[in-house]
Image (cartoon, rainbow, N blue to C red; front, side, top):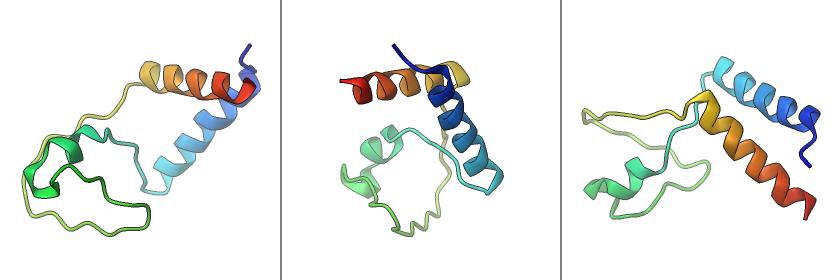
Amino acid sequence: MVNPKDTKLITDFLDFLESHKFMVIRQDFFKESKSWYNTTPKRGDKVVLNINYKMERPSDEELNHEIELFLKKQDV
């Protein structure tokens, strides 16, 4: 059973990140882009892109689903 307080905490943290100019994006962009050769930048890497691209951000429902999956894994 997922604790609603944990879900709220993670959601609040994601909102905090966005308020500090960070955002969650899907990794598919990096996997499908030929310029990355199927590698995702590591944490802390700086990426400079001079291209036009379409970014898809997860919806609130998708984020909530992922949060629930994450919290369920923590219970095991």
